[in-house]
Image 1 (cartoon, helix red, strand yellow):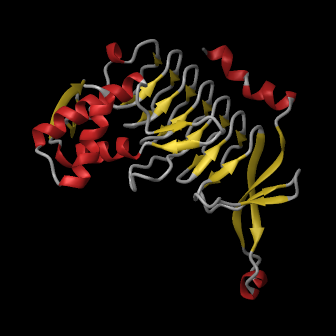
Image 2: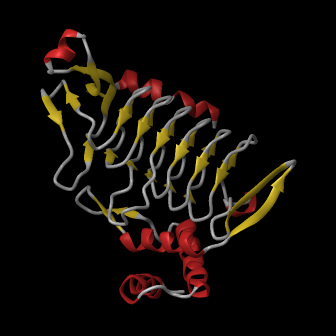
Length: 279
């Protein structure tokens, strides 16, 4: 099915009303294949360094979830599974030149995983996600629905990259190429981490998280588009911010914040490159 026909069919569903179940399975099935090959992405980079959302892709996935039946999936030993028929986990023969270490990881149908990606168990890559070549996804890490992860990224143990299907026009979480996301860090809705940035262990970022850029003496906030952008090569660590309410001050209360302490340097590069020996 041509991409232009695929897009037109999905966009027409919102305009003309509910399609038949058979049509949804046929069209969304083709969309799932296009996502897996990387021919289609839920969001894509544009020439000026920004990103644009392909809302029709997310719309198609939502229609798929709405109409697909829950079916029995092939068991894994004594474990039984049931899921939507359009989005089962992909088998080893379906994921190409990827190192999938035994232990319970899964790549769901409709996710792109590039050559040379390493997945340590257990981790999960959800539908619509894009994972660039040479990326490492460590144990207990999650790449959420439609999240965009670039080439050569390291998601450390327990790292969470949030997913977003609704609303269709919302920007998925973006981790650009060469980034390092530390253990138990979470990059959630409305955040874009620019290339080669380092997100320290335990940092939690959402679009509403205050980020204090100490080297440049500024506070970063979401833009008019609702996106919080972490600058290229920034090193972000957990911090706190004193509350201004008098009672909170008296109790010594503070809220979480994120702090850019420096830009990435040779020492940081060396620490972030240690995992290359594990490939």
